[in-house]
Length: 200
Image (cartoon, rainbow, N blue to C red):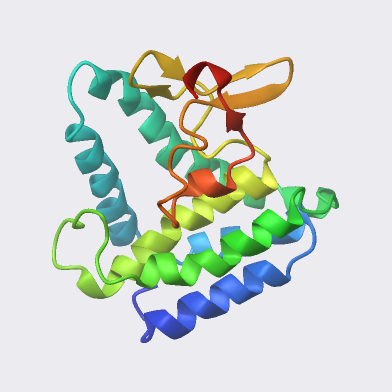
């Protein structure tokens, strides 16, 4: 990924490529291809950023949340690569479940990745790579939400107040699903989970 000269051009190309796919398998294949372009150094920086964000949370919530943050990053990354190695994409002929939401997600990606400042700095001297590090986050979210039809935050993720992302009778609920609508680049706006009625 470090050989790419223009983040604006490259990220807009990737978003357009994603938006053009029709099936979950085709989407998974593109996501795996793009994720594999990130080198070990990039993954180290992104991983350090995830840990940094978790470390800012208050105790004892921080230690409850940490395993789910790691599952989000390490777990989904490895699931995506394993699916690619196993040739899973050829079997996934189903169309993307919510086409309209998926297309909105793809339109959001460039502006979210290319905005002037991320919510928090990345470790090291990596300013030219920040848009791509932001992109990595959205690629993994696309895998969870649009290939696997899973919520953006993994099931079990705790939130303050004792709430968690959970399923009931086959339906997934999240305490913050409708709480971040004003944050236009939040994955909550594209998540298949429903707002938890216990936290309206």
